[in-house]
Length: 70
Image 1 (cartoon, rainbow, N blue to C red):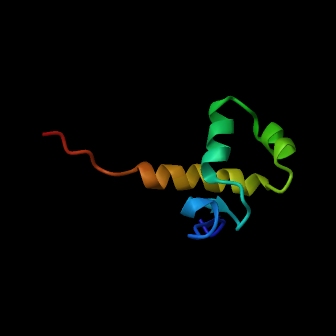
Image 2: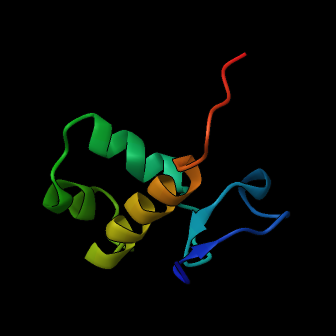
């Protein structure tokens, strides 16, 4: 996950890709809109295929927490 960077002065401290101003959520939203990896790479030419994979790994890792129901 070294491709994901978080800097307070960039994009409001939201996770970005390799210091670019492309947020992890931007990529996830494109995937959720059913864009293919190829379409995303055309839309955001600064990205690499591994960046998209890193976004998915980041999301999976940060959503993996226990929910305690009361």
